[in-house]
Length: 262
Image (spheres, rainbow, N blue to C red):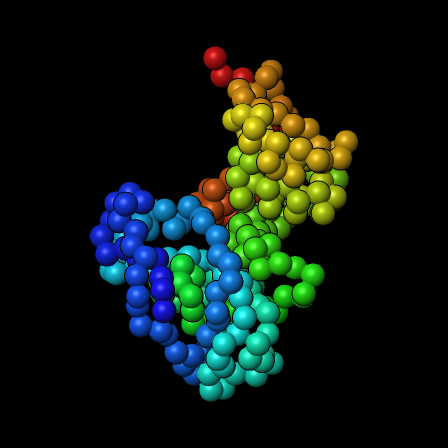
């Protein structure tokens, strides 16, 4: 099969489009014929190389995938060859204490498609059956491949850890990025008032904030004056590392102000 592979770290020039062996669907796995994938920051980080993290080479990245089931391995039920599917790129065991508590992202054996195993920058990708999700005919492969990683990240930060509630104020930083656009939609679905911030008007125009209802406030460039929002809800829009720190602290009351820098 054809795949996009890199055998050394560097810029886009290290990517090669070449023939590689086809994967097989092992026990508990499904082989997907990839129709669409997406580009996430993790793909770029892995290609460039990350300090302290050894990436096995050669490498096929790509965490998001949508396509058609080509083959089903032993011990798989509930899925069919020819079915239209996408994936949850995070692989957890479902048995450890963190999985039992509903925190699959903190699984003791957590792995990611495209990072800890070959990803979707290929014609075929083999993944565990329990992360495969059927998609309706009304959803295109491109739409299905654009959603999983960014929405899972935003949901984990805002709902699982941030515990946002209807009527709260939520500040979304980087509103034009993938996680930011997902966060805006999740916050509005929850019934929050959304403050969307991005560095340029162009980035905001590409985000859901450009078509937001009157319950949303849009800020571009340096934040003018001060924007005030609930402190806990604002923390929910921070990085995963900040979220982990926030999950360890005591509940916070009060409000948090962001001020203009000169």
